[in-house]
Amino acid sequence: METSKLPLISIVTPMYNSKKFIDETIQSVLNQTFSDWEMLLVDDCSPDGSFKYVQGKYIGEPRVKVIQNQVNSGAGVTRNNALALASGRYIAFLDSDDMWDPSKLQYQLAYMQGNSAPISHTSFSFMDEEGNAARGLVDVSYKVDLAKHLRKTEMGMSTCMVDTKLVGSFRLSEVRARQDFLLWVSLLAQGHKSYGLQKYLTKYRIRKGQISANKFVVVPKTFLLYMGISHVPIHMRFVYFVGYVVNAFAKRSKRRR
Image (cartoon, rainbow, N blue to C red; front, side, top):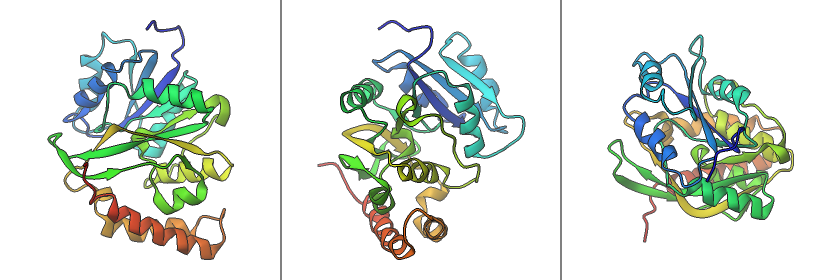
């Protein structure tokens, strides 16, 4: 498949101390059966040398573009800096330690075009630091609105793609935690819906000491986020939060049949 002057898909990848895993992440993009993309890697001033490493290693691949923040700013600002440089109609997100199935972009783009979907997300599985399969699966719904998102939080950031022709330009919150969750709240609150592609096309890496993996730390912080969502009545915020807690623990216990 030939690459056009302007890529159809821009891939947003924030990096921070990503040197250990970034080659696998980038390779999963280079292996895509769909080739009309650009990958925008923005380093958030990593002390492990991620920026110079990636910049040097992939200098011969023009679709892989490496940028560095002037100061450490958090994932929200880092993703926004990538969005400001994106030239594709579709925006796909991929974190710097996750991986895609080779057919991910091809399947997802066809699915979005076939359904005129403004946003889409895929099912995903988990792996450990060494890339071995880990317990847990997230099976997505056919369609997600704001209420379903608040109950299930099934939209993994590295699985999501947005059609800017249908959604318009957007930016993430610049708070340092849960910007991804708040992004989908914002877009779904506008009336957009995300279409779920029921294929395991993304692998989410569980890292030692990862805050998002420790639900006993994340749950209290998430409760405060739910209480601050003004788009729904306060009694429903409690209802949706209970649904989030149940699903957060359940998805980490599933195994493939």
